[in-house]
Amino acid sequence: MSRILIVEDEQDLAHLLTYNLTAAGYETEVTHTGAAALAKAKSFKPELVLLDLMLPDLPGSEVLRLVKEDPNLRRTAVVMVTAKGQEQDRVQGLEMGADDYVVKPFSVRELILRVKAVLRRLASDSEGSSALAAGTIQLDPARHEVRVADAEVALTALEFRLLKTLLERPGRVQTREVLLSDVWGIEAEITTRTVDTHIKRLREKLGPAGEVIETVRGVGYKLASPDREA
Image (cartoon, rainbow, N blue to C red; front, side, top):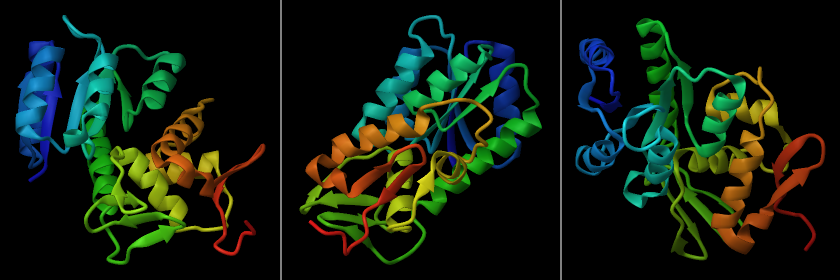
């Protein structure tokens, strides 16, 4: 039973989400403020957080940032649920690391389908028993672990999925549209630097080993072929 933390200050909506997600087979907890959400996330350890952007104390964007920076919550997905539906708001949320973005008012049925899709992508991160490697980078899907030169590197669920996708396709150029679809599960109907932002963060966390991720100008990215000349 997957655990979902609902962070929503509208009592009626929080109750509606709790009822429907529980009926769909999920274990739920509810908080109404950002501070309470951060505390509850540490003890509840949810697989997914439904996060309202407009909270009475902390901005939802700050809660998202703190969740993504917490090593103990690195495998937690975050779906933003907000009335801020402008394209720039959605782009900002995705670039900050949100796994999906749902605009109010929404269909509860659609929201549950999107929750299921995000959780399926999380589960797929651990699929495959064989470790993947490139240079000094080693990725173990079963343990959901990445190591560089035998030192563990803490990646968010999205960063892990992005690296895993590239490692599975060495030498093959991946366009931004393909990565948005395969890693985020969204269609590229908006102009966004989400992929570029996450590649930059991934390279930074991998250090010098991140140079194995090559930019193909005007197209996308690829993992350097094993036989690339030094």
